[in-house]
Length: 342
Ligand code: KG4
Ligand code: ZN
Image 1 (cartoon, protein in one colour):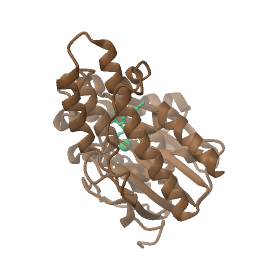
Image 2 (cartoon, rainbow, N blue to C red):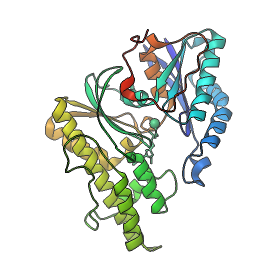
Image 3 (cartoon, rainbow, N blue to C red):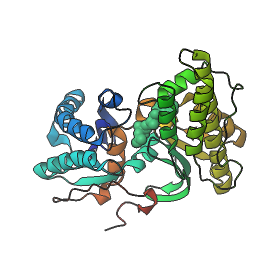
Image 4 (cartoon, rainbow, N blue to C red):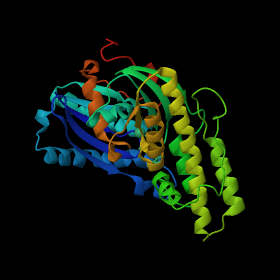
């Protein structure tokens, strides 16, 4: 089965075709980052309008890239949530219309399930069961995964997501939007021992996290210590911030592995691209005899390939007909294994 995946939940328009026997056949992506840069964050209405403009040309490019005709597609998978409602509706309506016109089924995919399964696009792919750390701009979650749709939430951020903290820190340090990669780059030049930022909720048992206090700490340090043009201090703040976030994420993952007895850790979502996080997780896992799995960097952030893959694994949930599913809020652990809902 060849599945066309469509991702439009936020500010990336992504399409891909996944073949359940041959793997990923091709993918295309358009990032709206520049469109939203002046506003310091994603403007939902602008995001929706841009998805509408991009979807058809991107599909044409994908078909050209893969040398396939639309008739070669057996099913459509679209991101149905969580995300920006208007943005979701563009991909959902587009995907459903395509499926309906071609008389093929469509699968409504959970965006975070896409992230969680993305490392399975790689070789070697992780086997079930595993612990997953999902760290994106909208979510920070630790999940125990026994199989597709068999998810148990172990912990999550009680306030800001890790990526959101990176983005807000970038804003305070005047690094623009989206800020995660810029903070990470700057942090490489910073000294680790100049500032000591708090490690929220590390002193407490459990796997929940919190990052909003850290943001306040960045704000106060910026106000107290940083003057325009002082590049060294700016880098030191970025480094201290990154160290604190990474410390929290690594320790929570260590506890999750210890608690569940799992030997595999899957890391996905935009913050999973962070190099310091990767290095520190590798050390922690090696010490426990565990293995860490990531998607390739370009599939850490939003993309169509992970949605096509999740759709291929969920063909049992494919719907014929006309239903257009879009849910701004949708918890991951409310999902069931493929086919269970029928
Ligand atoms: O998964 P994603 O593309 O979108 C959501 O579903 O939210 O994640 C985007 C987030 C942004 O907050 C961005 O700043 C962050 O991932 N990010 C990073 C890095 N690359 C992207 N954060 C830290 N270090 C990075 N290298
Ligand atoms: Zn995402």
